[in-house]
Image (cartoon, rainbow, N blue to C red; front, side):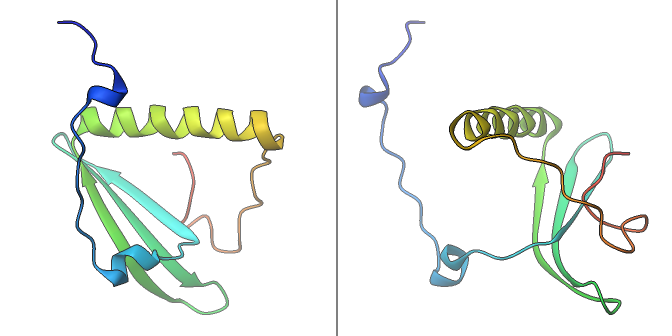
Amino acid sequence: MPEQNPAQQPQIQLKATDEVLKGAYSNVAQVIHNREQFQIDFMNMDLANPIGVLVARTILAPGHMKRLVAALQDNLRRYEQQFGEVHEADAPAGADRIGFRAS
């Protein structure tokens, strides 16, 4: 199958509410999975108190998760080429219980 020129690809239209378009701040994420899917919960945690709000939950098939990870790595690589190396942030207090981490 021949490759399509990006200019020839059909235009995709998305509908989004104003609330979704505003975006949501997350300072903590948790990834869990089973055989069929990955679930990423993005949370906004008050790190001084054990209070948090789930701001988004995304559920992905394993194949889509792998594509997302590749896209994130590619974007980070291009970001660092343009703006310089990004250093991993120090883990906040309580990070051993929840947060952005590899297990």
